[in-house]
Image (cartoon, rainbow, N blue to C red; front, side):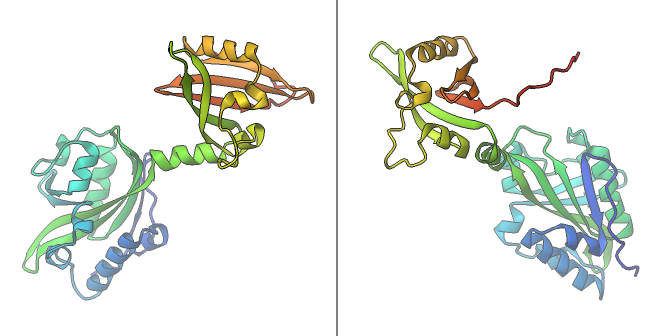
Length: 285
């Protein structure tokens, strides 16, 4: 019985993979560490079997798990977890990996083949192929014997989201150097936009508008010095009717801010940035 191999980088930039005991240094997810520890402990005495991990599994495991049965030239989905099916919008249960339309199938098959042939675990990370909330996934792949007297190999995959769109966009909003505001339009009886109610502002925007303290601020765009000008407001409203609109704001202090605004669904998104002076120009295209 050979020991686990060291960390091994994956075959492409689209999928990063690690094999053997070294995966514990890369995988920080608690469930991944617990499953990998259990596999290695059993492996020290014998080959782990499907029953070791799939005898009345908890829903937290089953919902985010995939079980493959290795065939002659492909892998068949014996189980496709409920949470994973809901994420991608379809089920692969009972179907073959070769039927899955993914640009990284060759990389996945190489990982699964190595796990099956060398009987060693793997941890890999890959980007989602489908339009879903999760952008980056982590997956633990554990090779398991079908039974103590059945040498066929099943692969148990536990999948967990590493990065999702919501957290990524929140980080971009909260940590951007640009001032960013999201406002809900205030309209008159004819539907004309007369003001905007500030419903979100990152740190730089709150400092510019003075809207950091929601309990005391009026939270109306036109109550701030930046948007009090009728000329600027009329320019923004007219531009928002056709798409994105921009303007340069010259403050009495001598500072100039670049403003961009656009209507996104039922909201107005505004970005303000103090440009570097002078900004270099590059010829492109």
